[in-house]
Length: 90
Image (cartoon, rainbow, N blue to C red):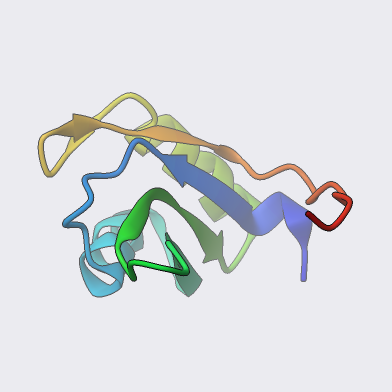
């Protein structure tokens, strides 16, 4: 997995569905994957997702197109995802 192609998408509406998000990001290019983060206990959206684009160029285009733009009533936060930090188990 190329981390330059992976986007962090934050401030999502809790009603946002993975396929709606994927379709929205397809405007910037090919969406390789879309992972909406869900709360383990309630199954509800946690308000953020990771969208992987086919290329770094498409990922950068998506950041330019969608960061701070409104989607389903919320201004999105879109940026290149940082590698996940190892966190000690709780």
